[in-house]
Image (cartoon, rainbow, N blue to C red; front, side, top):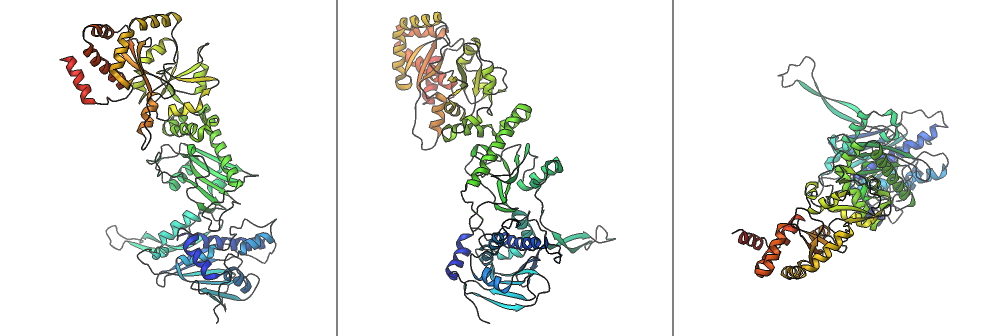
Amino acid sequence: MTKTEFKAESKKLLNLMINSIYTNKEIFLRELLSNASDATDKLHFKSLTDSKIKSSFEIKIEVDKENRKLRIIDNGIGMTKKELENNLGTIAKSGSLDFKEKNEKDAANIIGQFGVGFYSAFMVAEKVEVLTKSYEEEKAYLWESEGVEGYTIKESEKSTIGTTITLTLKKDDENYNYSNFLQEYYLTSLVKKYSDYLKYPIKMECEHTRKKENAKEDDKDAFETYKTLDTLNSITPIWDKNKNEVTEQELNDFYKEKFQDFQDPLKTIFYKTEGTATFSSILFIPKAPPFNYYTKEFKKDLKLYCNGVLIMENCTDLLPEYFGFVKGMVDSKDLSLNISREILQKTRQLQVIAKNLEKKVRSELSSWLKNNRTEYEKFFDNFGVSLKYGLYSSYGANKENLKDLVLFKSSFNGNYVTLKEYVSRMKENQNEIYYACGESYEKIKNMPQIEFIKDKGYEVLFFTHEVDEFSIKMLSEYEGKKFKNITSEEVNLETQEEKTKAEETTKQYKDLFTKMQEALKDKVLEVKLSNKLKNSAACLSTKGEISIEMEKVLNAMPNSNKVKSQKILEINENHKIFKKLCELEKNNPEKLKQYSKILYDCAALMEGISPENPVEFLNEVSDIMA
């Protein structure tokens, strides 16, 4: 029997496919099962017009541990000798693609297109045998190969139509344990992972344990093992069913099994489309984020299928980063894939699917916010920061889509409010949306500037996340209303009488403020009187676009260039400390410098800024108290 060389520059190309095209050895099982499904599909398609074909279509996996053999058996269409030579003798020749082209209008959804999946078997096998009998011929043929050296084809015996692929697995080495593919539990997990939704049963003989009849509890041999032919795959994807056919409990159990979450999802979204983007999907919003959600290690848990075959476990292209919390499955029948089926081609079709999914999730969130505020707020507590990052990212490209989904705590009643709700309560002549930044709701509530704003009758949004102010800066305005930080010098709520009085008093105490500013050197741009303070002695405000909170965030970033906000120290004329400052200006200029530094550090502490030199600060305070 003569060995035949592969036709398509075989040695070089086969080596490339085995060592480079596939990144994961376990993929071979997905490829062989997909090929078996294709073959079964072809015969099933023929059976629609040929009444002589009567078969219960299925795929079997058999394990022979002793001889290190793994078999994939189908009762599909089989291959003739010529088809064996064409499909397995020529690398990258696809019988499935030919079948689809010849039956373009009516063919079933055949998976294979490129004809290279079969050769992934050589990643794990030292020898591959293909015993096949075509539905068109009486003779059976055996194809054998040990890899790049070539293959042989000879007549053989087979009683039924179909194909049996036998892999003689490689011996284990220090780099890989090939014996895993002879283990029942491992094969079962791979079928569940990659081929759970192939539409034909995938069966394997599995071992189980049961208690012997009439056995006593303390009997050492009370249990016995037995084997049954089990179906490993689910066959029908839950997302292909109608929503009213699936119970909430089934959905919850499916979610927890597939995504290893011990909690039920907070929300489930069924979504199917036909037309330019034909796909089925089921999406879940978890109750809580995973521990690594806000880290670089986090991967979106969106699984992409093509005809029920898992193509990508973490498909990053299906939803934007700000919807990265969504988990789920998307199944499309006609995706454009690369030859290994592991990487998507950047096609318009994928972009259309992604656009549809993004729109659907956004619509569901909007409806959720409107119709179930309590549940939405639970969601927002865990994932709201993602939406705020979405406002800020890509130079605000998505701000119009997200601005009505974000929530902020407010001085109105301490609860979450939307920007629309804030604007609806604005005073008649109010032109700005006021906000304050801080580490927590309680800290912002106690800021000295808050009392002044509230006394004027204005509502304040509380920004407690680092991204809040950046996202609002990117948003710029809402319904024509600009955003304004209450610590900004530009906040101008004084009456004309208050302004005039402040200007006159500032002139009167110009020398005092100049000496205080000199004592603080480059820490502040200016020292002046404040009309914003009631009970506090001093506070910090800023001039320009960079607020104190933005300065803290930016300077905390690794390798960032340090920035500095233009700070203004504002003094409360009605506080007893002001009288003390005036006395020190006349009687003790050195002590005035000391008081100025302490006032600044205390005002900075209220903004969450630690003293540059804590020891010096403590010594200054101790000296005054002594």
